[in-house]
Image 1 (cartoon, one colour):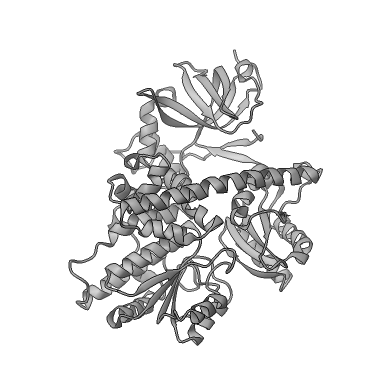
Image 2 (tube, one colour; image 1 turned 135 degrees about the vertical axis):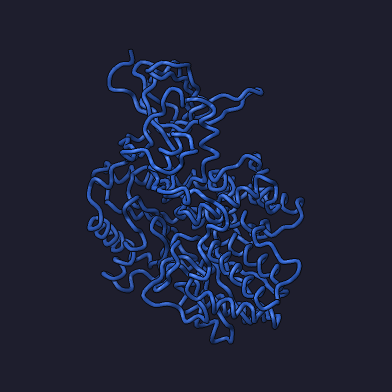
Length: 581
């Protein structure tokens, strides 16, 4: 394992005054994550922020109500990732529930169209004779200046719903709903695209109810919360209080078997029991299978899976998505090996690497460069952009992944300001972004990117570190703790799943599979032995039985031959400096 600095999350000096009915461990963990009141742990729908705080939502509701009243043709324009897919499904289902009969969707091709609403998409709709009366973007549109103009020039009205950061110029849409647009007072700036669309639907339902136009029996938009939870977790947006409510409410529906057949089918093909899932399963099991369609083929397959009403049809599509995911993992493995060879060929150690990495290989696949950038970032602890060739043969498309403390879209904005015209397109979040530039500009861009990163960070920011919640006491190292922590979520970005560290005697170790390390551990303070497993350590590992190990871990329940025992999922371990004794 790459050596890392182990840091411990700061703990409050005094016991919090709230959470008197919680176990002490949970009070400590919640306090370390910024919780200051019992209200912040209330996940009822009544605790959600009001949709009416979103700038532009009144006009969006007015246009949608008009479309329902006149039964206009509405087209939802989505995106090719999990947030875009769930946003599209929520829009399709929600508008139908609220009385719209003619609603369809279109998802740009990652390879033919690129990201978002473009003039090319509008031209294709015109050529197909499929121009809608109203176009609604979900999870995109805030940067679609030319695309929105093209749509309105064709006579369409346009509602933009998005959550990405706005640029200096906004599109001239008929309505824009985006918590990150200038002047929007909505408190949860971390809403995913699917959350924004859900809010639009709730405001529309309120308006229709007040006008006595709501279909009866009144539609239950809460039935869409499984999709909202999936998109929110899969897009890795910060889980502030508002987003935790969305995720927890969605998880409850899934555990009760009240989710969309497509979500249940995706869990089934992954071998997960829907009654016991956590937010981690949405992020690492369901999300990647859904994303695989947009990465390798057509996200319409993923959306069709989410929209399927028949369990049999959902299973068929889920199996297809699972196949895409297996193919994606194979391509990713090959690309990761190529990238590592490229790094090795640079003949540089970590200290000699650029602070901002921009890597390109003509053989890399557009669909998985985001995953590749994330893997290289993990290996080097540098903000990384992986580029693949565009279909036109002249441009390259990049996918960026950042490190804590570096807002990657702001970095791209700084490059654009210093070198106008170099970036043909760009957009994104704090931790992830995408861009297009001419292949001939790659060297100049790489230099400019590294320069802005160096101007933004200090050397200490590049040190690989892992932050833990400190040690668990001996009486906390038990199966009940694993169950407690699983129930205590939802955990996610900026509300991280608890992880602990401690020093252990390594009773035995052995490599299982190709590169996993099976361990038998015992705390130095005493107590019984505990199983541990470290994944993807490689076949060659130190002999920890001689030295003992400092272990960073999550407590987990492992069931084998009908018996369930405590197992530590090891994220990182290193030999102790002094021999175990």
